[in-house]
Amino acid sequence: MMSRVRPSSIANAIALLGICIAAGLAQAADSAYPTRPVRLVVPFPPGGGVDATARIVAPKLSDSMGQYWIADNRPGAGGNLASEIVARANPDGHTVLLALDTMLTANPILYKMTFSVEKELKPVVILAVSDQMVVVHPSVPAQTLKELVALAKQKPGAFRHGSGGMGSSNHLAAEQFKKAAGIDVVHVPYKGAGPSIAAVLSGEIQMNISSTASTIGFIKAGRLRALASTGPKRGALPEVPTIAESGYPGFEALQWYGLVVPGGTPKSIVARIHKDSVKALESADVRAAMERLGLQQDPSTPVALVARIKKETAKWSAIIKDAGIRLQ
Image (cartoon, rainbow, N blue to C red; front, side, top):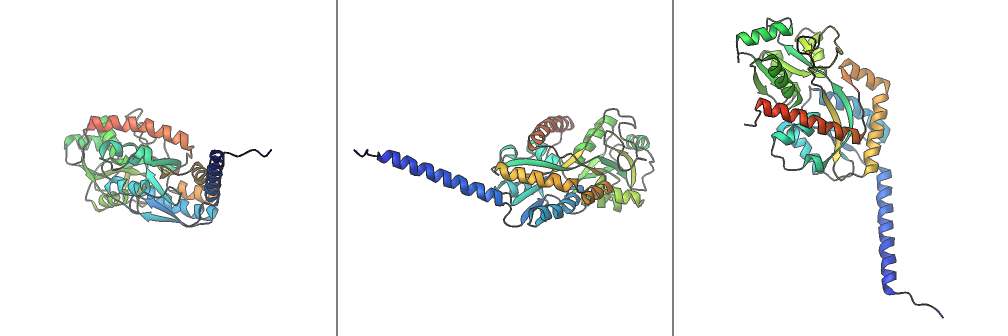
């Protein structure tokens, strides 16, 4: 006798088949990634370390992935404008953010965010790490960091320093140094490291703490004078001492630039971007280009990067609170 098949069993089988087909289609789509050009959203204008890194790495990612990675500069709101573009994008890996570290660590503390950085942005890989240079306009009569501090103490509030914006890594590094040195220097925020460096070059402000990548060319040309670096050891300009060497032991304020995707991006796509990024960083021409700008490499895993963000969030939170930094 032929047994009857229950309607519920048929419905369950059809539902299971549908799930399998959907999963198969999704997996196929992931494996085909990317299927069109990738928009690399850069949160600052040209002239800074973030933009320079994008220009170095994007061509290599284009070659390895078979689709163009196109840099799209979207400055504004301390990088939050670019972050929101990516947070709201379709999580298919075709819209990627090249973030400055403090966009993920300090901005959620300083700004009233319209989205959750932790939930709606997913860190993938660090492309470059940079120490920062304390630079002054050649007219400033200080040849060493000690002399600069002495001048600043003689005239509290007379010196002005620039940054890439409120809460940017160069702003927070400057606040960290001002506290360590016990000096009063007025902060002037700009819409990126490039414009802030231009302000020092023109004499509009007297000093800056900014990435080696954005300052090294002007230092070598004699248009800026480097007094110290913020790294744990001397870097691309070995003649320039560190802040720690200059009388402030333990001082360190690095900045890094990393790729970030929308929060719902599949793991397979995250893994592909990470793999191809590491491959790009290993190429001889990318290494050489980064070394010329004083950029170092630390392509940690996504999991390690999330842990680093949490650790640095705690550090910058304390500095922001102690310095009384508030958005006006």
